[in-house]
Image 1 (cartoon, rainbow, N blue to C red):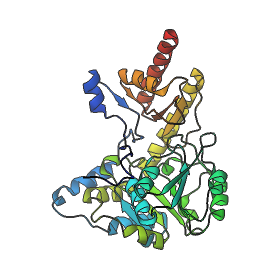
Image 2 (cartoon, one colour; image 1 turned 60 degrees about the horizontal axis):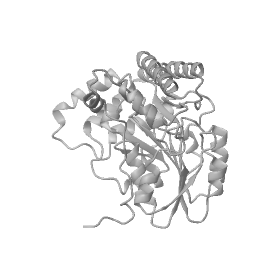
Image 3 (cartoon, rainbow, N blue to C red; image 1 turned 45 degrees about the horizontal axis):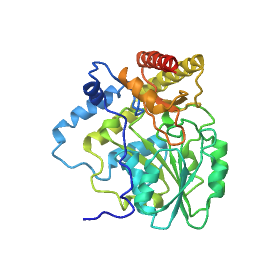
Image 4 (tube, rainbow, N blue to C red; image 1 turned 90 degrees about the vertical axis):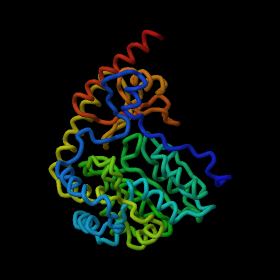
Length: 365
């Protein structure tokens, strides 16, 4: 039995190494995972209560259209319900967009170092991938625009970009969108947008009013702390959402996830707390990298990418032996690791471990 010829070379997505595996493999009792940009502060207590209420309903299929959650989110964002679609994380929305809009021979444009699921799903649809190098760690929008032609179907922009953490500003993105042809769909991935209060950061939902060819992706996996429940969403013009919805699998989000997301939306104080703690964590890590003489990209999400001046797999392995799980092995950034902002205690333990690793490497030459 042979699979589609265009998928045989595709790598399987590799998430951050699980804590349990590291403990078992290395015989460690304490392991800190700073690899998958999860929220170290968990989720809202209101979310936990909402999930408990659902325990007696696990024998019943969820609402396939997520009607109640859609209404709550629409009210929160100030959009119509017809502009929203839910998925098992925003990664499923990426899959649905590729499935709905790409056919063999179409071209799709993305950065050369960004969230890998854009490329992965476009390749499954046998589209031609056009990768544009990041410029100082951020999307080079003029260069991406220059690659648009009659075969271009989708442009992907991750803002903040994963893994570099950089952003394109409101003025940069607005100028770009005004020049993109109406027949080209722009996917704006704002998975980490809730962490940002910088006035230069664009709110994709506001831009939807002017651009019918824009779809914005967001998730409950990051600041809301619902990564295990797998629920994210897209916001766009009703036509774009309708076409995307036509390829959505039935009952693709669970009752528990829908209840949790609805409760999470209502707890604004939890988001404010997480945003402030993250800001303090980024400041601490930046100050420590400055002290250690390590260059890093300006970070806007809940992670930071730092140049450790050595091959990143070596540093990853050394940190792992000290009980710290980081993220490494970037194609165009071979000496960088990406670190999730943890609690103050986790951040301090990471810095102590990193400093020790770099000192040991210097002694060994």
